[in-house]
Length: 164
Image (tube, rainbow, N blue to C red; front, side, top):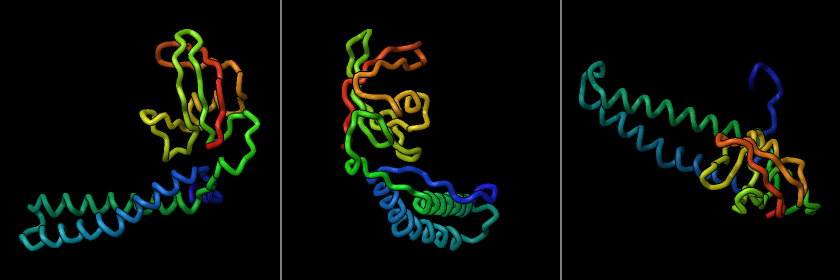
């Protein structure tokens, strides 16, 4: 718990939670035993002070256990939002998929609004607290929005809002 506050719920999509659970299983059942055997192997080589493999494996173990702890924490705080259970009134909310059209170029884009651990711009998954996410949340289908990009301000029309 941070600063003794109550644990803050972290919104997450069903898919986001599944990915975290899959990663947790991988880290615990596959990665952890691999690291343990690497440590045992390195230890068998004798002097630990000069043993780079041992220190690398211990560092990997520390990172792996830290990530396991982090995922457990996220899962404990997860507020799973199943967007398909909401009636779609055209409003952009967490989990919705937004079709945008760049009014200057005619380029069409689609983004899904997701939680922190799912955000991945390459895959058109944007964090709801990001600058773009903040602009979109609460807007409606057919609204016009201005999005600040590194290349300047771009104007978009919200063509569609899907709850999928």
